[in-house]
Image (cartoon, rainbow, N blue to C red; front, side, top):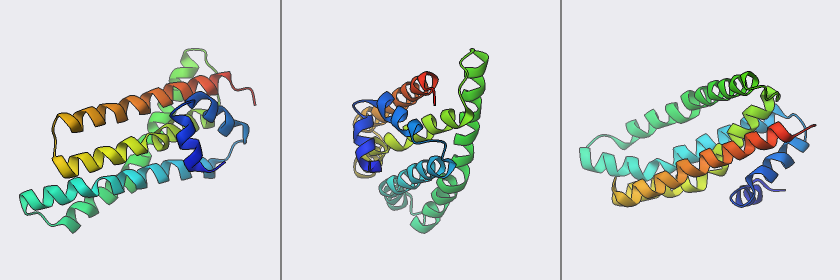
Length: 161
């Protein structure tokens, strides 16, 4: 199934989608592709906000975009790998034995699946700045990410493949 269709399905049935992805076998290339696609989309989502900041402060837009590029393409993937490792370790300490790949896939997929809300958040902050509407959209984005991640980890614990 297409990634875009799986993202839409995740908003309705996150555990089922992660179970389907785990059924496809261990594919590290696919997992890192999910992570990099999510980071790339969130990088793009920052552009409206960066344009607003550049306009308001007089900073160079190209400089701000370059800083975001380094952050989202080089720094954040490393953070996500560290978080995936810590979540795997926490699950092992809680006597929930899952492969490290399953913990990574659940986290990376959750991040990618929540990016539509992240894109909306970027647009909201770019058009209206930081305000109540941006906070609501940001809260929806964060809540969706953590919900998808929790459900993905539940699917990984239940998966026997």
